[in-house]
Image (cartoon, rainbow, N blue to C red; front, side, top):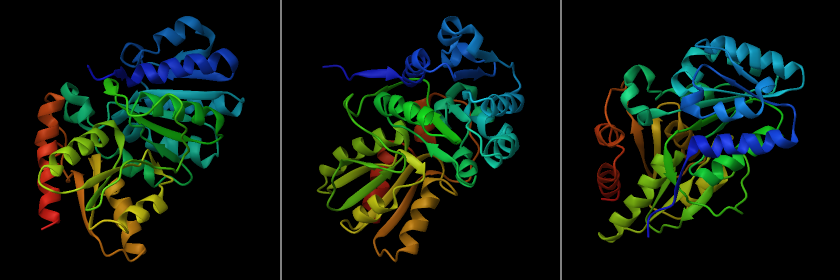
Length: 313
């Protein structure tokens, strides 16, 4: 039986369309990437609630902030590199510092940018967004969690950063699953090791690594973080208390992102389990297929398995 998948951009847009039917304050902004994000369907349905600002992402955030002061709920999206590096000061000051209600979306994070190459490959966006005071940072792992968090973002006043790939990803959760900001989900219990993973790519890679490790007698589990900020410290500490080793796994720089966050939690709480980080290690991106890049940067199952085996020696 074929694995069921859905494009994350469709999960995002389908949810916005449903929300917009009942809430006239939902508005969408794009930096001339409607065909990439598929928000053209929203434009067609609600032309007076759609704003294409052109290739001017900083201005897009400024407009979104202005719309927020009028009671609107703006969802503004662009490629993750532009939604983080290029607009950081505007998003920091105009939206977050001003205590407004802007929902910023970064697509194609990390190696999922693929052929767009190193200039368009955001490895550092999680580290940037994590230090913005009061900002909620979310990276759902499948279409169900993506749709759920878009709904939660619309309901929750405040600024949010949503990090999603555009391409199809496997379903991990049932449609009736409930989610909360700051609450992780334990997908698999492990006795020897726990992968603390963020995002569709690394959650699925970690689950595959568990299968491979089982053949060598290692019982590993996976904790799906879902929300980097606020992060579910209690769930991480609970798993750390049950296993010999914890490995963080992210499609981003390990410095300042999930790896940094998990290291802080373990260190500040005196955890004595072994710890390692899977992610990008102080490098820029490059052009290639997603499979090539996943292997190139050590995010592939083989690299993860090797790291786990070394850690448990």
